[in-house]
Length: 365
Ligand SMILES: Cc1cc2nc3c(=O)[nH]c(=O)nc-3n(C[C@H](O)[C@H](O)[C@H](O)COP(=O)(O)O)c2cc1C
Image 1: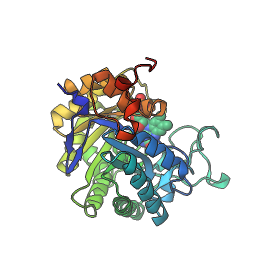
Image 2: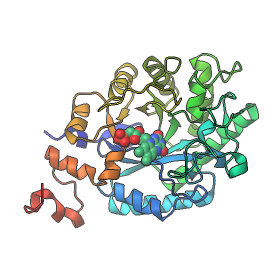
Image 3: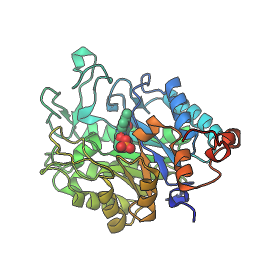
């Protein structure tokens, strides 16, 4: 029997050739939001072993929506053209691979330093920018107090998501996912830890979802029918006053009813005071709840690197897709290792076939 990890899956209008997804991972290597040669090499590299999908890192829909000065942004046509080039090259090496982009806004966690350049946040007078959020509550001690978004600010950002979606489609993505996790702007509206508003953008879960839902509708109004559209949500904030797994299920219901095609279940990042209990597969049980209770194609992620574990997650119906982050940084050819481990033939392109372990008996095991 074919390994379930290598079976195709229908995600809304999109057929993915297998269930393996490269998780979105910031590369801090962009130039004013525009991909550089680093992205070309990195993304074609992880695409080469033909995962079902490569999700391009968190991409800010406006300049102050980036996490750092090195993060991608989709607020310019230059960014659209650079992404189009990268996708075109990647599909030369891996014609079946699909590309998603994670559109987001960093909100109160923006203006962060690049890795290795300190912790916390850069203030506007030191080359950063004024951050925005649902309520004037800093993410942590010493961080900026975000400017509370008013209606016109919210409308501006909704329009920015719409415009970024148009550019992403023109760049050739197959899928768009909203970054509705990890404490960034959309999730900071959903989490009661950061949204204390009493207007129509706050209150109960439905009220706190109003802004993300307005973004969903704006994006839907411009993307063509062949684009898969989903979201990465927080399965839990890992904090007694934050979002819980029950909230994740409720959110997924709302997003499915709004017409989204898939959900990725991650967690954390909403507060520095989270009590995260991490371990292998630690986020899988919440994904399983979303899959079973909501009935939407569901992706899990987090501390999964063993092909046999990934296969069992799919075969046992715990999730529909498995995303891997650091395992792909460690080994961009992870799908080939998984195919070897699971006895799946035919995953190498013809140019690389002689590298297959089956044909190369001297290969060190
Ligand atoms: C270098 C790096 C950058 C990341 N950037 C993003 C990002 O842009 N968007 C996001 O939702 N998660 C991001 N993450 C989280 C990953 O997508 C993933 O959820 C997390 O690393 C857990 O999966 P893993 O254990 O397979 O690495 C990042 C993780 C790493 C290691």
